[in-house]
Image (cartoon, rainbow, N blue to C red):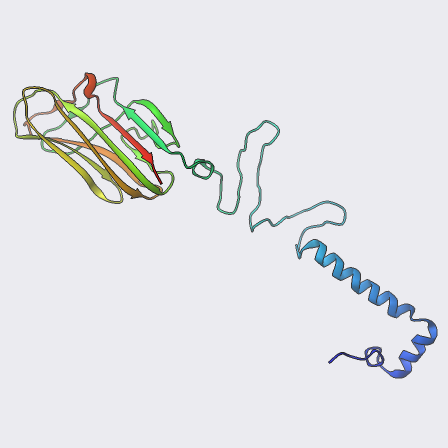
Length: 231
């Protein structure tokens, strides 16, 4: 129920006195209240933003703040947009890489698993490969990936088999190929498709049972690892 004007002013006598005076304080009070409403709507309930003189001191945009942006020289240094710093996965869904070992052969011990390492980049879009950790791809963006690799063993006798397998930190061994000893180079390639999370590591491993260490093959059988995000 609305409050009548006399009651709002305190009493009928007071109201009549103000009517006789021409309503100056009533008008001023109501205009002031209307201005408060207008300013509140204009400011959008931004508590610490000063819009009256054109200076926004603390702006709230989707509950985040732009901390440091370089626009003049075309480089974005550090931006916080709702989920944190802008990184490659936020700029593009394209993520793929291929690396290989070209400068030297790698020694594979007998009877133990050895992780293959690489020294040459063929392509590295999305920062999956780092020279600081040359034996792996590190997933930067969760998604569905196809990945694989291969290497060769020279025709060295002893033992019964040569094996290549892919592994991830989240899934262990995910794909395996085993080859029998042959008079020629034993080439092994392996690939798979699986969902990977950000931070997971993908590696290619070698196993042989000759009884002594064997160097990886050269030529077209160089150790290599590749990966591509497909969804």
